[in-house]
Image (cartoon, rainbow, N blue to C red; front, side):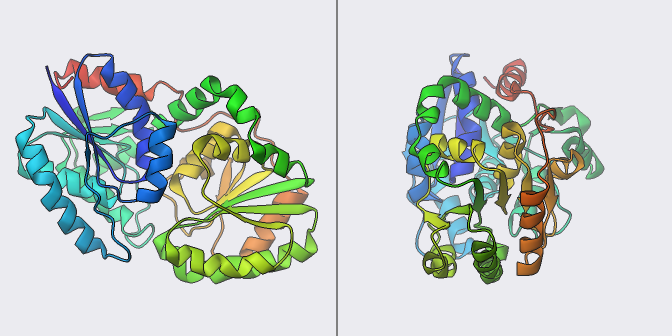
Length: 367
C-alpha cells in the first residue's frame, strides 16, 4: 500500500490540506500527517476543526527563534521520520518554512515532493518575506507541481519547470470554504459573532500578521484612531495573531474606543461567520485574499505586492500601501461606495481541487 507523508506547520496549511487528506483516504492509502507545530497555538484549533490527527508532532516552535534556527531543527527532526517510513511521496503546501524544510529533506532522501499551491509569485523577494523565496526554492525541489490558476502554471513554465509535471487544479481553499459552509450551516449561523456584529450598522474585519509589516503596524493603529472617531457606527474587528510582535504593536488599540474590537483568534467556523457578516475585509494574509472571493467580500490587501494578482484582476480586491493615510482613504471609500460582488465567481477554483489532485497522484501510482 502506498504511503504518503503530508507535512504542515501552520494553520493555513492545515486548512488547505484537509480536503486533500480526506480525498486521499478514499484510495485506501496510508496517510501520515506530520506537524512541525510551527504555529502551535493556532494549530490546535485548526486540527480540531478539520478532524486531523498528526501521527508525528515535532514541537519545534520556540519563542523568537530565527528562521535559520527553525529550518535547521525541522530538517534534523524530519530526516529520520522520512527515511524510516518508506514514503512514496511527501506532500507540502505553499510557502512556509515547514514546506521548504520538508521539501529539502525529502529531496535529499530521493523521495518525490508534491507541491500543493505551486507557482504563486509576487516577483519581489522581500514581499512576502521569506515566503516568496521559499516557494521558488520548493519549485526546484518538487516532482509534481499543483498550480491553482493558469497564471501560476505560466509562472512555473517561465522558470523552466517541465509542463509535464505541472497540473492546473484550482485552489483547495475553495473546497474548504464550500464544504465547511455546507456541512456546518447551523453552527456557523448560531455563532455568537453574528450577535456581536449585529450591534453595529457596519462591520469591518481586519487581520494582520505578516513579518514584513510588523514595523508598520503603528500605521494601522493610527488609521483606526481616526476611523474610530469619524465612523462611530462602524465596528472594526481585529483577531489578534498570537505572535507577540503583532500583539504588542496592536495593544494601543484597546483604549481607543468601543468600536475597536481586539478579539482572540477565532476557530474556522466563527471566522467564516465573521467574514460573511462583514461589509468588507482588510488583510495582509494570502489565504484571506482567496477566502474573500468565495465569501464574495471585497478585500483591501495591505501590501505593495501580492502573489495572488487574480484577486485584483477579478475586481474583487485592491492593494493598499501600508500607511495610515492610504488605509483611511481605502476604508472610507469602501464604506461610502461598497462593491457588490454577488455576481462574481472566485478566480481560484470551483471546489473540486482536492479530488483532482488525488486522482493525479493515483494515476501516477503515488496513491
